[in-house]
Length: 172
Image (cartoon, rainbow, N blue to C red; front, side, top):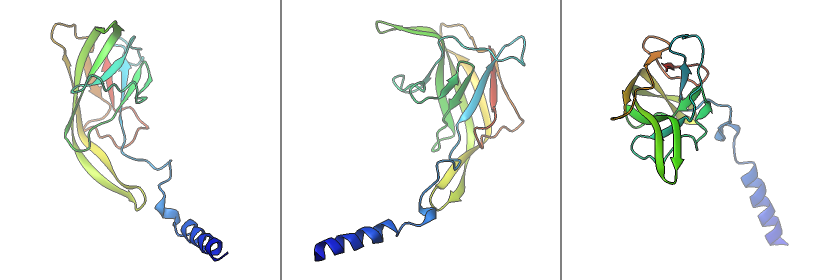
């Protein structure tokens, strides 16, 4: 009987020892991803889908962002940026296909450079990183056509502070 009472007291103490601010709520903004929208090169106000869109980590082609749900639609992508560096690179394919291990498609490389700043959120959530002076450049892969014509920031001195707005548009 003493063991049961001891265990019950231990359980009650543990259950009520956590404070409200020890748990980070899911709706608390954390380190944002960069929102990039694809638009028509001739009608710049119109979004334009990219058929066969695939996003790969530049240094590790086996790590694709498709698996991380970074493509919100075929006309928009969410790109996580590195918090421990000032540059992130991705290979972005148009018309991607993998037929028996043979990769086809038209890849372009996007390089994103930025400055990082850590901002305190709360005791439970810790810090989040925001990105300032964000610059996106496009480089076609050797031997392929440049399907991305140019990239334009939505604001001068573009910053990535949240995922509620478009940060860059890529015209194709």
